[in-house]
Image: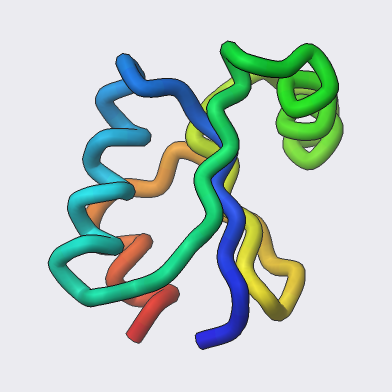
Length: 78
């Protein structure tokens, strides 16, 4: 799979789940903690059509998943 970027926070349950799925499947990704950057927060909101929900996961094919559950994320990476 191509490059993946995940926008999230360290305390978000859905973000923790996504990190677990990536780790279990040996998937490399870039993690952007939106609490550390106003620009990253704005980008995550922009990617989600103006709605503040995380994680926002951008895949190499430019598709985006927002708050995916385990099954949705596994379907995308497999």
